[in-house]
Image 1: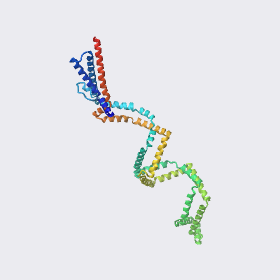
Image 2: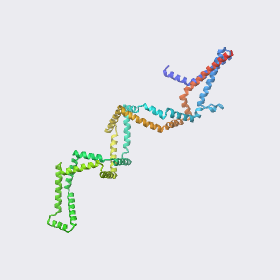
Image 3: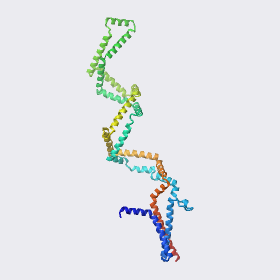
Image 4: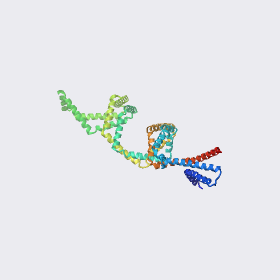
Length: 438
C-alpha cells in the first residue's frame, strides 16, 4: 500500500469518525439488547455493557444533533428554531471575527511590535540581487520611464516644468555664488579669452560700413546740436566747414582709426590699463554680488523675471522636452542601449552598496517601519473592512462549507468523544447501581 493511499484512507476515516462512532454505539446497543432479550447473553456483565452502549448512543446522538445544529436547520418543533446557528448568527459572528482580527491578531500594536524584529531592507536588497529578479526590475523601470517619456511633449508638462523652473530660479539666491565665481574667474585670468573675443568682435564691427555710417551720423548730430546753441558757436562751425578744418568725414575716419588702434593695443598688451580697469570693475561687481548689494539684487531679480516671464522661455522648455522625448524613446527602445546599460549599472551598484551598508539599512528600516506604523494607525480600520467584506461576499452555503472545511474534523472528534464518554459514564452508572443494590 502506497503512502498516498494510506493518507487518503486516514483522511476519510478522520472525516467519518463521528458517523462511525454513532453506528458502533447504536449497533452495540441493538446487538446487546437483542442478545439479552433472546437469552443469548446472560449475566450482569452483559447488562452493564448494554447500558454502556445505551449511554454511548445517547451521547453520540446528542453530539450529532449539537454539531448538525451548527450548520443546518433541523425541523423539530420548538427545538428547530435553535438550529442553523452559524447562518442565523453570521452578522454577530462576522463582527466578532472582525474584532478578534483587528484588536487581537492584527492590532496596530502587534503589527508594529512584529515589525521591530524584521530587517525589511536586507530582504528587499537581497531579493533584488538575484539575476532573475534583476531582469524584472529593469523591465519595470524601462516601462515606467517609457510611460513617463510619452508625455514629455504634453503642453501641461511644459507648463509644469516652466513653473518649477520659475519658482526655483526666482527663489534662488544666485548673487553670492555668481559673485564668488566671477571673482575666482578674474583672479585666475580665465576671463581673458572672453574679453579678447569681444574685442575682436568690436574690431570687426569697426570695419563694417554700418558702423562708419552710425559714427558719421552721430558726429553730424553733435555738430548740429552745438551749432544751435548760440551765434558764436554757429559761426565757428560754419567757418570751420568753409575752411575745411571741420570735416565730418575726416573726423569719422580719425575716430575709427583711434578705436582700431586702441583695440589692437588692448589685444596685444595683456597688462593694458583698460584691462586692469576692467578687472577692477569686475572684482568690484563680484564683491557687491557676494555682499548682496540691494541695487545688484534688484537688477538680478528684474533680469530673472524678464527672462522667465518671456513667452520664449516656455517655448524653449517645450522644444527641449520634445527633443528629450525623442532621445528617451530611442534609448528606451531596447535593453542594450547606452542609457539602459548605464541605468542598470548604477541601479545595481546602489543595491550592492546598500546591501553592504548596515548603517544605511538601519536608517531605511527605521523610516519604513515608522511610515508603515503611521499607515497602519491611519488605515487600520481597513483591515476590519477587508475581513467584513470577504465574509459578506460568501452566501450561506459557502460560509457553512468553509467553516466545515476548517473545523469539521475536530467536530467529528467531539462526536466520538460524546459516544466514548457517554458509554463510559453508562458503564460507571450501571456498576454503581449494581453495587448499591447488592
